[in-house]
Image (cartoon, rainbow over the protein chains, first blue to last red):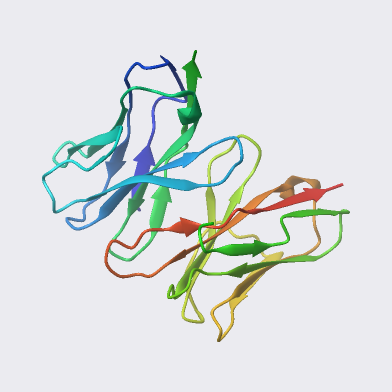
Length: 113
Length: 113
């Protein structure tokens, strides 16, 4: 079975600075999708960004971007110009070819004013 | 509003009781997933349905059951409730095509006293 590992249980960043959250995964598939979800204190799960494995170009959504290293099976999330509203739990997720979603254990991000 | 509707939002009940959580997927999505999130924990996959049929089963207890109806709404039944069943239960839906994003409802918060 696929596994998703987030090795940083907690991270902190100064407001307006940049932070990178790490995620690695294990798979033998060649076609899959990767996602980052954000869970703010409201506990709502919100999609932040997605990456198709067949695309070499890294996905970007405004201040959020990913560094996708397929060979290394690494999928990190970079948040630029961090804002107080970015404080949340961030989950990395993998979607298999069989449409199963596997989630990491999450990284709690604190933004320091 | 994500388009995935979960009811009730909050539920308080006693040990030994039975409850039903309801989910209406986003319009056009045929697949429904159920997840359990205990306090400060990650997401535990329970079960997935696709167009009325069970597609995959995760760490779902025998005391729990689910189904997806012809109108695609889904219900998660939790019986013989224990204190440890207190958690946030998420329903998520997906189209199982294209980018196949998992869209979450706001969750049903269950408290067992």
